[in-house]
Picture: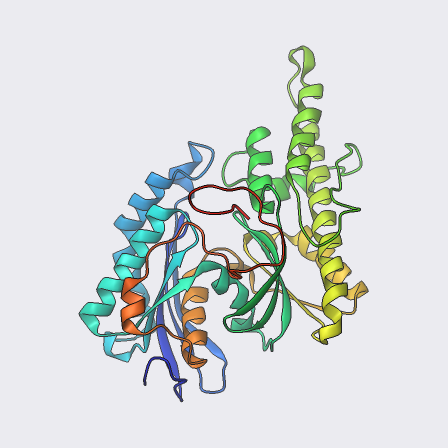
Length: 374
């Protein structure tokens, strides 16, 4: 097998994921026919360590990765029954994400690659999400991707491995970020997204009016900050005079927010589907942690059906951050002859920001030393 050329036969990879607060290692096989087999998939969740602070603390996350990663990799290799000599690739997330955590995973991947003489592939975390649907579903290219997570909300035309066109992005908060901030505002703890979904199931979405932003705005961009503000304004009105929010108040606010978010995601995605339909794909893939939300999945499925698209979503365990998708992304690049050569792989740096499409057609929002926020 030669890096840079597409190899034949089955391929085996170790995946390492440390971009946020999930420490993960997995071993995945890509069969010669292009199908996937997950041989092991180990995840250590840091939820309890961050719950006290109401959100992810980067320094705590990085230290937890450092403490847990070696043991997880050892367990993943043992469960898969794989030796280091069996590996065709070590794939490690190199960004985007919390820089301290990304550094831990990438440095570990580099060290293992050098010690065991296994090729290294730095992986873009967004590409791992973009290709994750192909692990469990025969999803040919091209397809339209809605990537919706705690840090990213984007619509991307996935034309092939390494070929991505960004059609829309958030102009402020990502959807998952808005869910978590809403949960924090209502005192629901961390992680907030699943708790908002649970409370929304018992609430009345019609009690409070929430904005549906960008209804007349051209393009496929998203905005969630107005919904978050609306939740705060409604909560402040309810608590005037020292009154406390009741269980019903919280449930109804969660239901109103979740319904508005689902409507907004569906409306902007429907616009993208109408512009994408001419390419004859008819496939909408939704990936990322927020794709685990059942109400949002149902709303997107209805929108896809209305536009003549088929909704494809990875299994729930592959929606949130995991190492199986990282291993798979590395294998996809290797099979396509796009793997980095050793010099480039070892020179790769951890990146806090790493857009899939370096020259997007959409407007860039925000600025700073690390580049545009979106």
